[in-house]
Length: 431
Image (cartoon, rainbow, N blue to C red):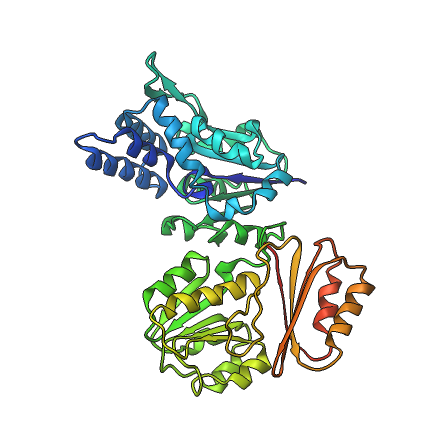
């Protein structure tokens, strides 16, 4: 059976609620602009939380809009810039699944179609409401015969379509959950990249903070190798808020704490520590997923460089206590996770890598002993791998080999690389 992907538009495919944004455009200069806008936003939230019917919400918002076709043109330009980041970077998924990736929305085709079409989503696979205009092109209503204009409209539509396949629903609102409640879809994924509604997430089969997460858990082709929302970053001690903002905006899962809590040790992937915070060796040894440590100050005496080397953990610190070190170190940590860069690391060879990864980037951290590159390249040769680019640098006890290869390889290659003698840590990046 084919898999079908039923995707919501507002606050899911895009970061915003389109009718709310249309109100900001159409009411510009109106003396009661903010008051009217807040009322439109209230209607939106009540419907998304299941507190009023969708039809009641839709009718209320349309009556307040005071919009026409010229406003729609401005809205479309705005929405094209507001596509959710994780949907935008996975454009290839929609191109490859054009037959079964559908937009089903209580929004309107007039602004949805121009936004999603450039992602390869077919016009016939866009299901939404349509506006009614008067002779002066003012929006005066909507087609109330469209099932999507009514309460439970998505359920009614799927009943009419009678899709023969496994259906996965992705959305942020109550109308999306109703698909799961109806028993018509395989699983419902509550999408929380832009907004999280407890009334929806509590009932979802899976909460997906990004489209990357949805693709990952369903083992589907995706733009990045591992969802960053699954990488836990702990920020401990006196760390300026700009650091948390940078890392959260990059997609990492952030926790800000005063001290290291034992419950996080086994899962933490990134640690950003304020000056004078010490990490004991027992905690460090137990942090099996830890990839990088940032330290706002000189980490000497507070973090074991020797143990970090043994575990393949990259340290970024600032011995000179520069003014903007919180921002600088946060960005260095993100650059290592995202691209493999170790530039200005305290303990690793300093390597700046090309930003464009054509295939997959394989990071091999190993003990700095003779013969490792020979072993690596023997594995690549035996697997008929076409190497696009390769980099090697060493520092003290650490060797760091980075190889970009084409993506059409047998996954047994990865196991072979991990089993090479003196391997400390191995990681794959693609984006």
